[in-house]
Image (cartoon, rainbow, N blue to C red; front, top):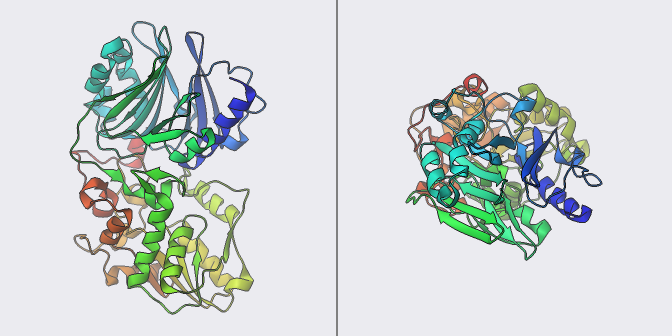
Length: 462
């Protein structure tokens, strides 16, 4: 691969760095072997592609940036992971998602190897790598026992090198494939394909795509009547330009803002977004109500880390303090509606309100595009019951009209603002444009479609 092509790959990889910022790595084919390179931190600061990495010689590779949802935050958990099959074929694996029953699957591995949920899948896949033409059926048998979510990419070496992409049967996480006449590409988000000028499509839930010397072939491993698309992808995780299940993230966020405007109209001088996650919803709200939108909270342009996906509480607070500041001239003496995408752990909102008070804001109202998150995610977004800000204010069964006014009043009092508003679950579903049954709403309802056992953070990080 020429240095110019490396630069394009670097930009594409960097464009989805928001999905994981702890570490990054790639595995590439060198002859019949696979070589891995891993680094900590943001891809933009990585030495891997700068001026051409001297070790990278092939044009078949997979890359990964890590957002820890299981196992510790140490170097041995940096992906992609490397393996050798029972017949000696090298392969590497990258995984987005979370296997909820990895302890049960670990018992199937000879020697009961430890490690993360991804390592368990990697170990169990060895015999399938050796299965040749029967690999789809063999890997289906392995993954048929896995509960939870997975978008997987395998790099397989040996005599018939290939890249394999697989999406779980319920389709929790995004995954797409593309081509441009020069090559084939796989990525979690559609924004990455812009750098290759590649036509792309989403991998279907339960589909396995094989890319080798003969081209790209598809195998539907699992037929699934029901899907469970993660609603939080549209609410927060996805880049604003990305498409998930045919729906653009920015459009959904804008609709969520407009939905809030239908039900919630405090008397304010202007709407103000929390950058960058609340901007689209704030724009949708301001347009629907016909009131100004002003940027009174500024984000430091060279602090690109996302506080939500940092691994520890102190890390999150540090990112918030470094990246956000208030324009006093905009907020002083004003009545303001602050709009953000969601309130999960309660890291950002209290700190921002304190900053706005100190800058002289007269009255503060706050609205969240996402309904209250009251139960932990088992499928690949890293929050737990013990961390959830809203959980302490739950009162009885949650329904489609949740939350009620009493709940909102409790949150407003806790945050120290004049009023708080959340979208309802029904408004969220309508804004996404999918059926309620096709979405994973477990963190909003406490109801899980799969028969899983919820684990504490300490248990997942062992």
